[in-house]
Length: 193
Image (cartoon, rainbow, N blue to C red; front, side, top):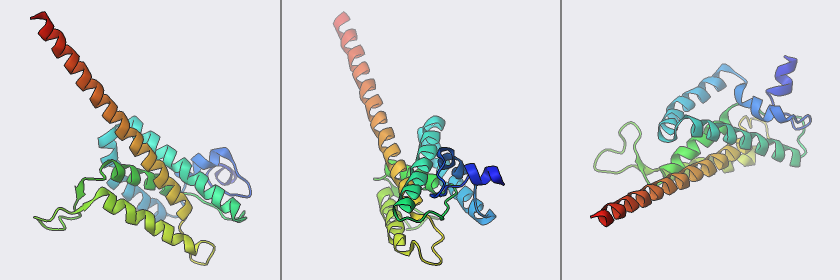
C-alpha cells in the first residue's frame, strides 16, 4: 500500500516523477478500470492498426504523462495540494484525440447512424465536442461531485493531437520520399534507353 501511494498516484503536495507514469496503471474502482479498458479496446485497437505498436505506445504513454503533468501543475497552481489523481483517462483521451485528429476529415457512423445516404460526422466533429465537454467541466473543479480530472483529460487530448500531427507529417514525408525515389528510378530507366 505504501508503494502504491508513492508511485501510482499523483499528489501535488508530494510530487514524484515516477508517479506521473505510474498513475496510468492504477484505478480507483473496478468501474473506473472497466470503463477505461472498454475505451482502450474500442479506440486503441483502431489507432494501433493505423500507426503500429511503437507509435501507439509512444502516444499512449506520452499522452498519459502530459495528462498527469497538466493535472499536477493545475492543482499546484490552484494551491490544492491534497487532491490526488490516478488512472489512464489522460492516456485514453490522447488515444482518442490522436485517432480523431489523424482521421479529422473522415466520416464516422455509430451503429450505422445516420443511415445512408447521409455521411456521418467527421473526426474533428467528434473531437471538438469532447474537448469542449472537458473545458466545460472545469467549472466544477473544487466543488463536491467533481469526480473527473478534466485537467488530465485536456492534457491527454493535447498529447494525442500532437502525436497524431507528428504521425501525419511523418507519413506525408515518407510518401513524398517514395514518390521522389520512384521518379528518380523512372528517369534513370528512360536515360538508359
